[in-house]
Length: 73
Image 1 (cartoon, rainbow, N blue to C red):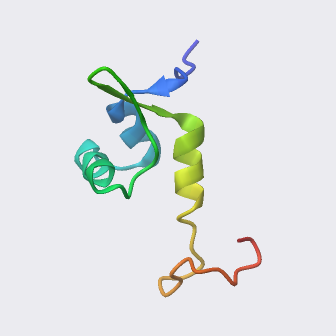
Image 2 (cartoon, one colour):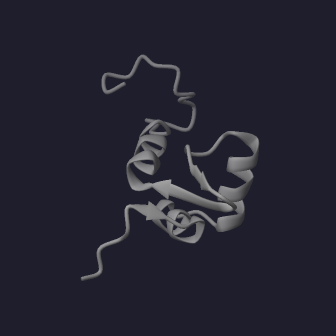
């Protein structure tokens, strides 16, 4: 079985999102990234939280600021 674990390490989360680990780290530090869990010194992400974060960034065009007005928002 190749099922991913419930809690993903930063490398796994970055891969799942198609981002670099460095970008995910920067988003976490700035508060722009997906919510995460801290277990001692370890950072972990839930796949469900990654999906919520990714869904919130859906856009219909490059000029779409995500402010609403879309039928699927």
